[in-house]
Length: 210
Image 1 (cartoon, rainbow, N blue to C red):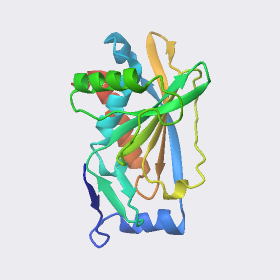
Image 2 (cartoon, rainbow, N blue to C red):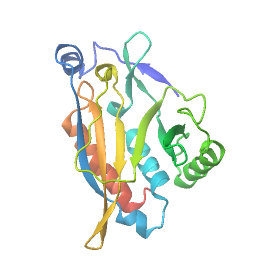
Image 3 (cartoon, helix red, strand yellow):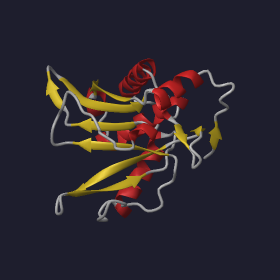
């Protein structure tokens, strides 16, 4: 994993970054409905399949891999891994796990299942220790569906990486849909980029990403 600092002198986005990061700090979220019927037809496990598809698209585009280093300078990770939550019914709490991304779906699924088996029952927020810097956050709310979802982060104006939240799926007219909330920082990600992300994500879901 590399973190390549951005050269502001040659960065086409410099003006927009300075505007939405410093002059008018701005984050935003959008909630969409994904058609996950193909996942059900292929009998894939929903959570790891979605983690794989989300990470695949994240790794395609630098605007979803942009972060700040310790000095507050923007740069781009060469590759991202998903950090995700697992729920503990006995304590009604959750733990965060992370899994190394693999381009091959079956390899990623094997790594996910290994992490879940080894760390999934651990209590406490940090289920799998030593999370790397190149992770982005995914959470799942399987108990309820929603049409809008927003996170209110006290220090969100300095957090550039995307955050994804999935909700309970519903069946209607022979199709299965699931809400996905995407929260991003306007300094690095415009509506165009989110729209492209959603379109490519749906295409991956449709064809299996293989």
